[in-house]
Length: 124
Figure 1 (cartoon, rainbow, N blue to C red):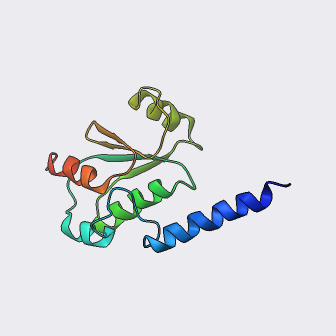
Figure 2 (figure 1 turned 180 degrees about the vertical axis):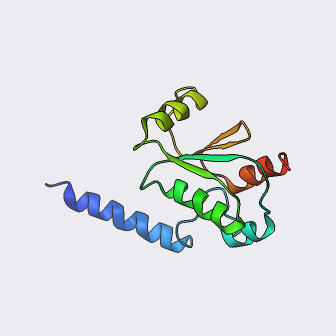
Figure 3 (figure 1 turned 135 degrees about the horizontal axis):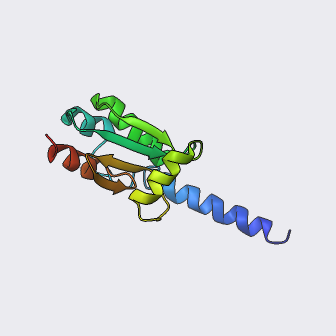
């Protein structure tokens, strides 16, 4: 328990640094707020499937973005659905990490709204 004060100090220092830098932001969208990006995006007829897990902040960001732009999609929970898990592992070559987004067969692992928008544009 002697290390508890050191751990608390490290956490406080990290929180102070994050606060000083303007808070936590989506790593891929630091220069453009999500609402602004979503306002510029348009839904397409592309078939979009998300592979997600409950509690994943990047999964929530992807779902929120798709909802914001009105893009139809299917959300498959890889924790609750064994078939979705098998499909997700096949599409990622066995590499874990969510979200995985399939846009007409183009696969993106992780969340980057700019990359996703590029995938949508190529499927218009």
